[in-house]
Length: 303
Image: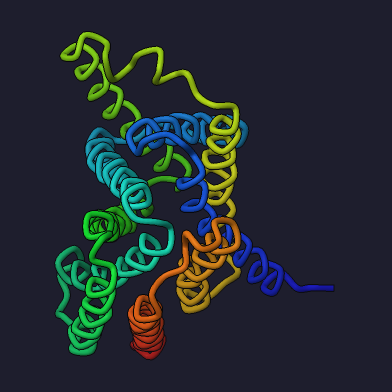
């Protein structure tokens, strides 16, 4: 029989595969980025609330923490808006390749958030990442807007990851996610209400907004329940049995899984110039090596 560590490791690969499938769903759903993110955040918020009530967790938090959660929720909403916007403007492969630069942004922002010194090899790896980005920009000039949106999304993912690193010390991850998703859904709702009022119902919350294809409803259900609520809660559970290095290394396979899935589903639409894959390989290799050195440094650090 498999032990808990091996079962958790294999299951975590399934979770990362699900995360990679998120981008594919974003391409399959016919909605634009704003309604797509609104539906995702609102639905996922509902699923996580059911989980919280089932587990009888308290939703009470100090006002100071709630204010931070509101800011984090806005950052996550912007991250998803730019993420799905990048998919619509470019494709799944470009978006996921560029999203992996989030680890590079984290290494730059982490010393600021946690007030520590910069590590020399992180600066060096940053220069290598820039080389990978240059190669991708050079061969995918027609997807310039999608690349820019993906980079903004990667930066925002680093910001909310660091924010959650501080918030998770004061509340259950599911409670944090509930408030963040609720904040994002409310913020987008306010934007859409204002847009509806300004345009006299021509855009925003109108009949067309709620008139979705049956396939969109199915994909949105999978996106919000399995790819968001289930994947998040499951990831927290399996991480109890895995080392930080294993988690980091496995998570970096998300763009790989996603690009393979996109190619299998969309075929030639996702086939890129060979140099694109060279640039992506440079970025991913740098991210993995950076994570390895960082984890090794933490292990060797005297307690």
